[in-house]
Length: 461
Ligand code: 5AD
Ligand code: SF4
Image (cartoon, rainbow, N blue to C red):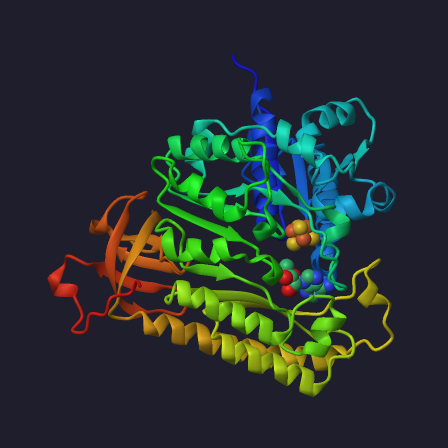
């Protein structure tokens, strides 16, 4: 009889970088025999990969730890419990004091040390590792096995840059993820080649400020994100490239040109603006005005007219007046978003804006959030409707919602439902958008004359 493999359950909160880190943790433990658990209840090791960006996100970890403590008491099971991610980085040993159920704390830059930390925890220690060791992380990150990559599908994240030196006055990231650091080009290319060889068709490059990427190239000099994208597009099998998240200050001419010239680079840009009021942008230390942002968006759209723009907004930053907020509505209208994320300002300990004594009342924040969300929802529907009758490429990435359907993503990142006869998962197929649902587009293969709508407009520039 073979011994049972230990089971790992990783629950990730927050951004896509945490999703990436969660996969790397699974990859680091795979050589020790760990397999994925279905749920926390049947795991031998539970990792909560946490987010600290807003208060609500950070609180979730403690309620989840409460549930785990109850589950342990009720079932008599004794899984090891690890807290990872940005709350781990921000609170460190405090977590051990506050939650006795926690066996180890590991920050986002130390995840490659997880196997060793688990050994220490098993021996009864309660280790805390929150070093800022990002270079070591990048060098020693566990590479995924081809089988693990295939199990994750035909799209993948690849972190190329971590940390931030911008110090927006609302944001904890410079404190939780540390100073900005880029992975060397050779490391990124090797990982992308590995992904592509295992069937990945779309790679999204991740970084808190991904457009500030300046990793060391094979020539010993720093390469820009644009240059890296051109190199990755040469890899056999890579059909689509994306990158997120960008800062307006770091969008250089080469990157804008890549949107015009590089077919694999998808016409989608996540470019947070946060506010449309110059007064608030200044108080946020964003180092750009509303007009700078709109001019930049214009330039990217000149390069790629069908660009789908996405962004982030914060409402109720300290001191925000009704007229500041109206400027935010105005910039959202002017920029014509295809989608956007909207947040109520959440004071974060240790950040300058949290110290201000002109905090906005929560009721006012909720009301503004509601108005902004209504506008964004309208824009999102309008953008989706503008695609009806157009030809788009769809990357088929999973079985459909209903039998007889296959699902994929548009170049603009929208979910698309197609007839199963359109192709197999991993194919990029040409399709015509026939209808818009609440959360997805419906499309038919472009060659299928019966489904072809009367009006056909070319979608791509
Ligand atoms: N409160 C609310 N939203 C925040 N974000 C970052 N910090 C805060 C905060 N303190 C938002 C920003 C950022 C996104 C990742 O989260 O919009 O772009
Ligand atoms: Fe949350 Fe920011 Fe950490 Fe991502 S990097 S998990 S958004 S605090």
